[in-house]
Figure (cartoon, rainbow, N blue to C red):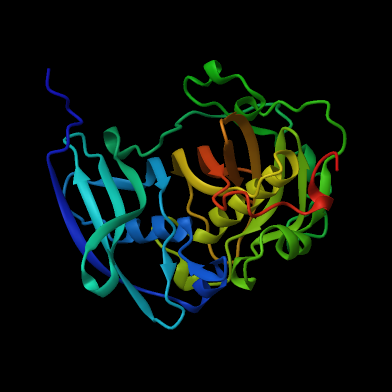
Length: 333
């Protein structure tokens, strides 16, 4: 029987991508590297507009395969958007570059990011998780003392929960939002986060206020950043990027790992995040997959409604053990 998801054709689109000044604040081992959130934005921006339409805000199978270092003296870099189209409307997108060997004796293609953008559903429905339900789950217990920026008093919780289709088979605290009896959270300021745990430059200081960590959850407020030019079809890349910082902090405390994102199972942008807005970020750890840490991530707006969901975020140490968390954040030390 023929598979209806079998790829039928592909294209390779050459890109010249500008390097805005804010990207120079995203560094690893002293080098500017392209953030995963920015790479996904580049792929979404450069999707061709032919039919059938797909929805770049519905994503599956994200993989961050190789870091993409950027030349600190360059204003742009060259890359390719390689796309494989499937009959069901799915588009597998890859961001690649060409790497040339010494004295131009060889050239090979290097994949940096890949993701599948999903087709629109029936009647234009683009929701991966269409069932949203108001319930009595205490999602915002950790935010009782957290007024959002610009508010003098904390807003009252609206006890919003959502139900994922088929989620009963994943009845973990991360899937259900169940709170454990784990005592008060371990809290520290965003300034300490960026001084000691996630040493990026100011443009990427988008966790605001306090970070709260428990064995079953990490939470913080995150900002959509201060750079309107960064906003694209996926919204602002800064809120998603800041959520990765919150997950990284959890891994440093409870797994003694400085973990970087390497992929995710699925992502849906319900309402694109915006420049200058503040969001509530909640990160729920899932069972580890060997040396890979796994999380579900939820971003909520000021009205406590979901704006973005990332399921099966995967993070691991890419330093070969060279990077270690500071003693003050590690549990039991």
